[in-house]
Image (tube, rainbow, N blue to C red):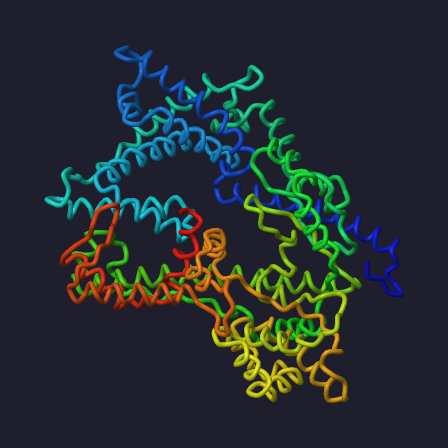
Length: 639
């Protein structure tokens, strides 16, 4: 354990316990804020407690709907319209929608009438868009995937997209699909109200907790409108469940003393019971399986993880100073851009802005409507970029603040655990050696060690790698650092905010951290000391090459595959993603030339003009290593 004149062992132990109390309290606050955020967004059904309740209530609600329909089959006295519309949907889906809408309505104290109408409309939407999906399942699935990628959370937006899809299919479906799709005629407000009232009645009679109806009617005053609320018993359960779940989401941070060694699947890591009970050694779904992962079963794993936990780190003060200056002066060097992305104005005349769908298309004309369609795609991309930018700005600010907070300690240590696939991760979300570029740059080893005979060589290789010059032989990387970058590195270290070449690196903050280290090495040697005596704190990273294929190649003794993923010695690193891209481009070119190349899609062969058209489109788009990286990485793991 690293100590200094102020931080004695006793003080650090007390500080660690205080940090763990803060982790606990911060986790509770974060959990409660997340629940309140869901409520404020009108998605109270998305809270942890309502999600848990819905799992228990949906099936009884479905049984109640089924019993209701069977009882009133052919009987008078109930709205035939409500029953007829309820029969258009399977009871389980109707039950899920009902329970979700009722939970969403409770925090805002929506009137019973308003809740029932909204519930009827949601049922209508489900029936309506299920018909659209039945007509063109693949097209609608593509629309849903697009909404998912765009992280669309607002129901109104998703509904508008589906309504637009329905309109397009209704206009073009004739002759293209077996089933014709007619334009939907909205249900009347009265019918939606009747349907919603029927479902609320079923919920009140079918769902109970401690012999009390889960959903009850309430009034704030004798003259006020009725609204729904949950029973007192359910409210008490919600409070207990919320308090329990809030304890399970601590805000993990580094330790200031070495964590406890792992001696059992649930014994190790953090010190306080409130934190340690939330973090087993291995993340698994089955507790029975976790209990079998003892130290006797995998002693090497326990030894490796405990060794990692004893490694001291500390905040890199030089990098922290630059990061703070960049933020203070609003320079955006190596940071997400400060200026928000702005959506260009829509190319729609003011007098047409109230029109939608076919009406807008007819009023604008095909040429102008094509521009409008292009604008919608462009604006969607801008919105996505803006969401990412905001998230990155927020995270960078928190990371720097976190580093400043932990910079006062003589050493930092990280608790390590394994995921279900055996990969090892340190438990720290904002500062650590496994985070993003700036996180990695803000920490270095707490204990410096001499470079040794080959240390300078590999330190130079690392510098070239974080710069981005990592696809050439090692000797060329060293020459690049020793000769081409020598003066540039001195300028950067002298004034990083003026000499900004470091921001051009692939990993700018890690390169900046390396520059400080390399400049110190140059000063060391300039003073007449040999390189091998220089004490360094910088971790030299060696990244794996497509570990899935590495494992398969090793197990199968596949020399060709092993060479492609750098398992065999070589001066120049192999790039399997680039090699695959080259093969794909060659295959596409042969298809365009008319050669007989077998290509399968959806387990069916593609041939002729369709295949040639697709191949030409891909060649025009450009197939590079980035395009090929994801399928090459993932397919070996699912083969």
